Every structure is written in structure tokens, then in C-alpha cells.
Image (cartoon, rainbow over the protein chains, first blue to last red):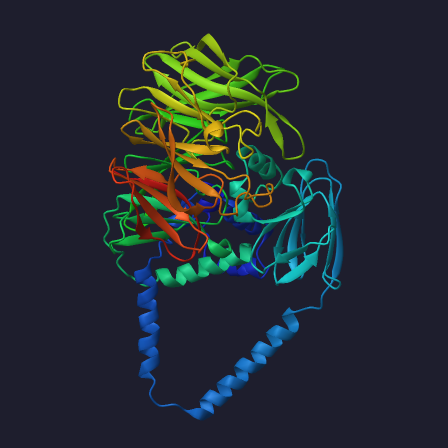
Length: 207
Length: 399
């Protein structure tokens, strides 16, 4: 089985361009298809990492480090200054102020994807969400998947605190079928009844 | 998430530049782990389930998608059906990598239940979209050596009602030229919730012509079996008698007024034995999910504890699951004093007929295989899994 993206070589350059938003529409489509592929071969052939690999790399790093006996404090100070300036710039420019957004998806068929400074959010059909990071409030109806880019907490419609952590993915729903408002981590969805999982998958293909 | 994937890809590219020979391992077991913090799921290969310091090898899978655990293992190969592409693929562990061997396209995206006709032929039942009010199941016979579809057909199954119109095909068995399916119907009760009707149906079908020859109605319980790629609900004993479980509890059938029960279909018979039933709910006061044969007329069940969960918001996360040994002849049920486990459905029980080995995620955040001696009834500790584990969702014997 050869899919489009397997014919095209997914390499470091294309991924870098994709990450910085500089690749062509066709390449973007193919990379996204590659990222969404749920078959094992998309990584398994090349990414077997075992403890030995990790420890060998660690040993190499520590060996290299111990070889540097003489310390040039001038260079260290200069390097520290550069690191500080870069770090400060990244911190300063990559942490925009907290915001307050309202999202709506009136479609009866498809989910809708939004990307924001502090999170990405995918709203299922017939859903709305107001995510107010300033006042830490969440008002919504329906369900959505949220992928935070920073840690934050929100108070939901029923005054429960929902905790969101950067880099994770959450399914949030007000459906009475779950008993109360839920913010399941994605892996938790694997433990819902199979028929429920199928219904959730129908709305959010990427889980 | 995509950026995380990109980062892990770049790290992998950098790591793979170094030539390091993988560990030499002759694994007897594979465990599928859901890891903490949404890290990719992994397969952990182990030589032994005993706590003896033997070699293990962990392979991360592509993502933390919820279906990573839905694979079939048979005679050295892993098989997987993609719910995105309907492609059925065959993989093999070579060195420290899973290599794609072959793949074929099917019309369906999910197997609801499977069985093996013989070592080379997989029988899979899928539910099909209905045409009008006629409910259909699609049956595949796939020769996994040649990776070819030997047979496929659609079977119309009767007794759907206007109210209960969605089909659940929960068990499949094949003996000689007869195909046997157990099914029930369910209805939606909300956006995600549903309930199953009170009746189970057992259909006998001539396998050469796919002609329905007999239907048996069962009203003692409902929701027969389930997605058995995720968890086992049936087995054949040494004599070839077929035992199976019904699952009306909230995690599967969601008709909890009916009991979880074990039933029997004797070898050579197409009818389920109406004189045989082990009423699990009545004996233990809770529903159970999962049935594993451990030899000598005994089976393991995994039961919930309704006093410990409130609803679906915490059902999977609370430490509530117990393991019990069922005597299939007398019907007596004995609790095994393991730590309480979490996770709604798991395929985590194996026996060498001396010990029962069960992989448990306990409330001390310890992830370990536990042993139960079937003779002395003593429990002891087996292999400990990495602390990065969140749930052990599968444990398969590879030999």
C-alpha cells in the first residue's frame, strides 16, 4: 500500500517548513495526511528507541562534557548573555497576553477547527464555546476538543474547575450522557463503551 | 499535538543517526501500554512475566491514539484494521522495529468480533449500515498467510424493531460448516448514550451458502460478548464446549437490570444450553466484563464495583476492578485478593494452568503483573512495568 505521502519523502526540511508555515499548500496537505495516518508503519520502522539507545546517547553527552576540563569564563559569560537574550525574547514574544474568544460551529455535519495563541480548538457540530482565559471562565454547549499550548484552568457552567495542561488533548462535553460536564484526556476515551467511542470518532476523526 | 509529533520526529531523526545495535531478545509476551501525559502508546516485549530481571524491549507506537491497542496477534504476526482507511495490515517484529508485511483493503472500518477458523483463516464479523429496516452483518474470511479475502458476504439478521434498530454482533463461532452469531439490538438514548433491548438472538448460518437456518431467542440476559479485539468474552474448553458471557452492565450493554451471566453451547450443538447459566450479578452483586479460561474447568472474570464509581465521568479512572475465579461446573465464584485495578476494558489475563498472570494498574501507581497460584491460592508479584505507564491495556502470549 503506497499512500501519497509515502511516495513523497517526508523529510526534515519539509517538516521544518511545515512547522514554520512556509511549505506549499500541496506539501501542507501531505504532511497533515502523514500526521493523521493511524497506521503503525508511519513511525514504527524507523523509531524503535530502547533504553540502550537512550543510555548510549546520555553516555556520549557526559563523556563529551567531562572532556572539557578548562573553563574559559569569558566565553561562558558571553554565551550566558546570548542565551539570556534569546530566552528573554522567546519568553517575551511567545507569550501573548491572555485572551477571551467565542467560537461557534453551526454546521450540522462537520466539526470546525480554530487555532489561537494559547490553544487549538475543534468544535463538534452544533456547538459553541466561550473560552475566557482572563477571567478563567468556560461557557459552552455541545462538545469540543482542546489542545492547550500553555497550562490554564477554567471554571465551567457548573462551577467546577477544569484543569488543562500544555501539550495534552482534551475532549470536553456537556452531554448528560456522561453524568456531568467532562474534560477527558484523550487516552481516557479508550475506556468509554465502544459504541460511544464510535460516535465520538464520527465527529473528531483525529482521535 | 502536531508540533509535539514534529518534535518527536526530529528527535528520532537525530537519534537514528547513531548506529546502535538493538537488544537481543526472544520475547514470549507483549504488553501494550497507554503511557502518562499523552505520550505515545508502546509495546513492551518481555521474555518472562516473572519478576526475575529478564530483558525487556519497549517500542513506542506512532501516537497516543485511542485505537492503538486494537490489534490481533497470531503466530508471530500482528494484524490491524485502520478505522481511517479500512485497510487491514500485517506486521512483524524484526529487530526492534515493527515492519509492515502486507495489507489489503476491506469495505468495513471496524471488526466487531473475530474468531479463527484455523491457524491461517480469520473470521471477522462487522456491522453494516442497514438498508431500510433490515439489519445486516458483514462476514469476512481472510487468509492471513496469503493476505487474501477467501469469502465475504452480507447476512440479514431478523428481529430489529423500530425502537431498537441498531445491531450489535457480539460473538462469532464456526464449527464444521455452520457459522454461529450472537447478537442484540440497541437504541440511542442521548448524543452518546444507548441501551440494549432485553433479548439476545443466536443465529445459525450455513457457511457455504450464508443461508440463515435457525434463530434461538434468549431472554435470560442481553448484550452477548463485545468487541473482542479489546477484551475476551468467550472460549472453548478442552472438550470443545463453547462458553461465553453477556455484558448488560453500563460499560457495554447498558441494560443493568439484566444479569451478567456465563452461558454454554456444547460441542456439536448449535443451540445454547437452556439448562446452563452462571448468574454472576446475583452471586457477586455487581456486573462484570471479560472472560478468560485458565484450564481445569475454571475461568477468570473482571468485575466492577458500583459503590466506587458515580458515572462515566470516573468509571474508567477509579480503582474498582476485582478479579474472580469461576468454577464453570459448580458455578461457585471466588475472589482473588489482588490490588484493585482501573481501566474499563482490558485484555490482561494469561495462564499456564499453574498460575494465572494478571496485569494490574493499582492505586499506588504501580503497574505490575500479579500471579495467582491455582493450587495453593497464594498471590505473588510478577514483572513490574515502567513508571511511565498509565494503563496496561493488553498482554498477549507470543508463542
